[in-house]
Length: 138
Image (cartoon, rainbow, N blue to C red):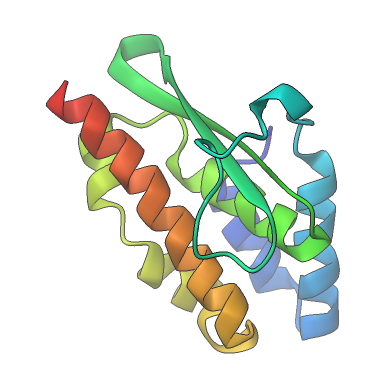
């Protein structure tokens, strides 16, 4: 994923219509690198999502974590891409402290997702924070 979370937020600000914003979310999902089928396992699956969502956390340079993820649903795959942009490349303590709700409000996701998608998005954020917390504790 080459777009920073700041660039994604700026792009959302430029789009007036929610149809355009949904198309943008889907576009972000299309840019997400494919995850190998061998990684789409029960241990990488995010529970609490209606769609199938998988997230993998890997150590990266300078004591940071890098996330990779995938989903079988177009919009959810885009949401995965947004959260990867927001949380990858940060130290575990910053990931744990990240205010995802503020990001959702900032770009309008808090009021434009179905309750099921909102719950799934929160489950994904919780999973990413749990991965970071486990790394910080190790």
